[in-house]
Length: 123
Image 1 (spheres, rainbow, N blue to C red):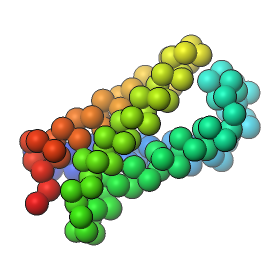
Image 2: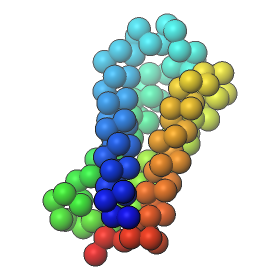
Image 3: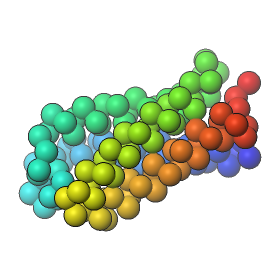
Image 4: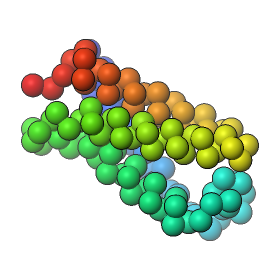
């Protein structure tokens, strides 16, 4: 279970970090074709991106650095909340492909939180 959780943590962290970087670097271009990006101010997306980035790093760094790995499930919970907000925004504006992408990461983050709080907590 520990290896499985690590794999999921790495996949979710990679998806979140690469998504934040892409959204930051391509915001103007993406806002023209993605209704949910165009509808809300860039500052809101940047704020969500900062939280998403911090929580995604929190999935990996505490365990790798062996410094307070009990923060991992807290980061997973925070990331699930941020992704729930993003999924809701995408659904509200009818961008279902982006909603599906953030929804899978949200569900995986919730599973990571459950796994690290209950099934296989860090010691």
